[in-house]
Length: 327
Image (cartoon, rainbow, N blue to C red; front, top):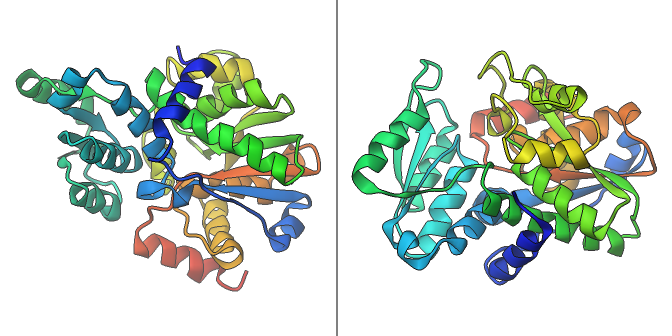
C-alpha cells in the first residue's frame, strides 16, 4: 500500500527530472463555472501527461540489477509514453503493449521515445496480460503497472503536493480537487498528499458517462465493474474496474464521484484552448468539464481541476474546435 512517506520519497527522486506544472486561471472560466477555477496543467508535463511522474517513480525505485533487465507496461498511450521516456532516461529498454485502436499520436510517440510497441486487439477480446506473460517468459522484464503499483501511486502523489502549495499561493485553502480518473492512480496519490498537507482540499473522481466505475464503487463502498470496455472518446480514463490498491485509498479519502459526457469534454477542450492556451485530450479534459458544467454538484467558492493530459489526435482536436469554436 502506498503511504505519504512513499510520496515524499518519490518527490525527492523526481526532483530535477519532473516539471512543476503551472496552476492556470481565467476569469472567463470562472464566469462559466460560477466560482474560481484553478487548472493544474499536467498536460504540460513531460510526454504530455501526469503519467511521467509515476513511471519515473517506479523505475527509479527498482533495484539496479532489476532495472538493467528492462521494463514492460501496458497502456492506451499516456502511461506508455511516460514509461518509454523514463526507461530511456534510465538507459534501459522498454516494451509497451498497446491497444491497436489507441490514438495514433500516442502509439507513434511511444515508438519515437525508444520503446518497442506490441499492439493487441482490445475490441476483439485479446488479453494484454496474456501477451505480457508470453513476452516475459523470454525476456524477464519488470512490470510497471499503469496505476495499481505503490511506487506509481507515490509518483502521482507528487502532483498533489504541488497542488497544495500552488493553491495556497493563490489564497485557496478550501476546494474540491477534481481528477480525471481511470484506474485511480493519480486520484489516490493526490488524496494521500492532500490528507497530509491540506485537509480542506478534497479529491473528487471524474469519469466519462458509461464508464463511471469509481462513481458507482464509491457510492456502494465496494469495487463495481463497468459493463463495457470501449465506446467513449476518453480513451485515457477507461478502465474496467477500480484498482485493488487505489480503491481503498479513495474509498477512505475521496468525496463522491462525478460523471461527464463526451460532448462536455469536447466543449472543455475548446475552452481550455481558447481561454488557457493549452491543448487537452478528451480524457484529460474531464475534470475541467465537471468544474465548468456540473457546478450544482460542487460546494464552495473555489474548485481545482487537474488537466491530466494533452495527447490528442488532430481529428479529435479539430472536432472540439469545430463544434465549440465560437464558444
